[in-house]
Image 1 (cartoon, rainbow, N blue to C red):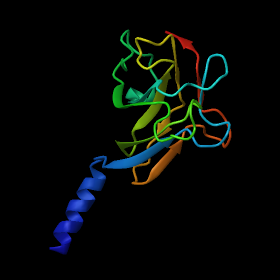
Image 2 (image 1 turned 90 degrees about the vertical axis):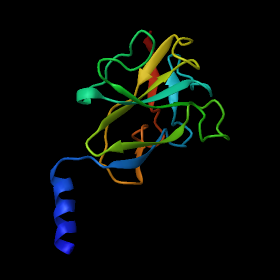
Image 3 (image 1 turned 90 degrees about the horizontal axis):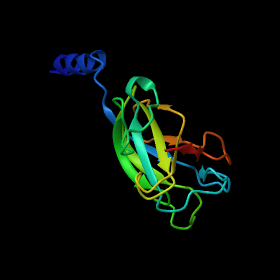
Image 4 (image 1 turned 120 degrees about the vertical axis):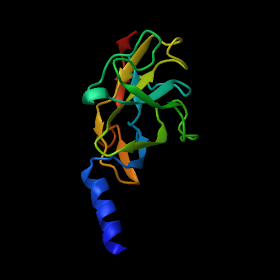
Length: 154
């Protein structure tokens, strides 16, 4: 019985099957961490946030509707202010997703509550998912640095 379990586990590991893991994505909570708008201020609470799986590990521009395009896949929709009730209008959010080891993800934020109501968007850098539960990605990348700017004209 032990050898059957061992063979099954090894087969799964060697087959390249990605096991989904829980990942926390945050802007960080420091005074200079968050997502900025094109004027240098913080994005306001309620602005659209998308977590996206990057096809081929490349960040692609959104489609005309604002949805991911070119094979990228939408993993989560949230908003600025999510899980930061005491940091009003500071461009912060903190979300949980499930992704597989080896996946490449990124965050896109918009300067309105929907892509249709937005004039600009911005993309984070990409993140390579390692694939273990409890993984955390602080998109600000460095303590007390803005995560990214929403400055690309739609």
